Image (tube, rainbow, N blue to C red):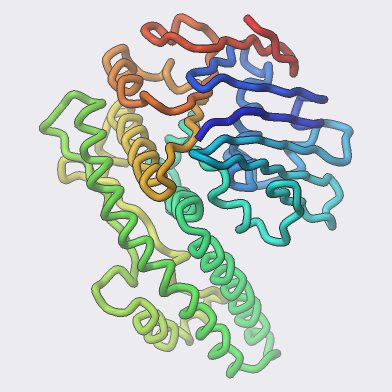
Length: 366
C-alpha cells in the first residue's frame, strides 16, 4: 500500500497542507512542537477514524476553528482508494466519514481501505498501562483485519452500556429486572465472535512477536510470549460460558452497579523468560517487546490484505541503542515509511527518499 496524497484543513496546527510522499522512506524533521506528529496522527485518523493519542476529536481541530478535515489517497495493487474524515467542534455533530467520494453512515465502512501500523512513545503503555490499553491494541488490529470484528465490538459496548445503566436504575428501585435477560442475550451474541477472534489473534501474535523479539534483541535465551487472559479463554463455547457467568454474578452486578464478566475485562499477559514483563524487565527489554508486537501486527495486516500497511514511526529510533535500531530498520524493508525525528543523526544508516522540514505548521523540502 502506498500513500500518494495527504491533505489537511485546519488540523491541529496546520491551516492547510498537501503532501505527496514518495514510495519509500519520508522523514519529517523539526523541533519538538513543530507539528511532525500531527501529520502521522492525521494518517492514523484516515485509517481508523480516530487519533492514536487522544479520545477527543475536538483536540484535532485547529484552535479557534469549528471544523477540520484530513483526506488521503492510497494506491493498492490494482485499486485506488480515497478516504477522509471531517471533525466538528460542536458536540452534537458527529464526525463525517468519506470513502471514495461518498459519505458512509458507519465508521466500520472505513476499515480496511487504508491500513497502518504506528510506533510511538505512547506504545510503552502497552507494557506498563492498564488492561484497557492492551485490549485497545488488540481491538485496533482486529478491526483493521476484519470489519466484522469492529461491528461486533461496537454492538457489545452498546449493550454493555445499556446493561450497566439498567443496573443503576434497579438500585434505585426503578426499571424491570427481567430486562437484564435481554441485554445478557445481546452481550452474548456479540461476545462470541469477539472472543474467538481474540483467541486466534493472540496465538498468532505470540508466535510472531517471539521471533521478532529474538531478532531485535539479539538475545536468544530471552523468550517473549503473549497470553490471552479472559474468563472466556477456555476451550468451551464463549457464548455459553458468558451466559452462565452473567447469571451467576447477577446479584454481585446489581450490588456493584457494573457488569463483572465479559470481554471488556480481558487482558494480554506479556511474559519474558517466564516472568511477567511489567514487573521484571528493563526499559530496553520492555521497548523491544513493544516493537516486536508492532512488527507482528505488520505481519498479520499484510497477510489479511495481501498488502503491507503504511508504517508510521514517531520519534522511536532515538530511544533505541545502535544495535537494536539497526536490526529494527533491517526488518522494515519494502514498506512505505513515514517517520519523525528532531535530528537526522538519529537515522544513521538509513537513506531516506525524502526529507521534509516541519516548522510551526508548515512543511518545506529540506
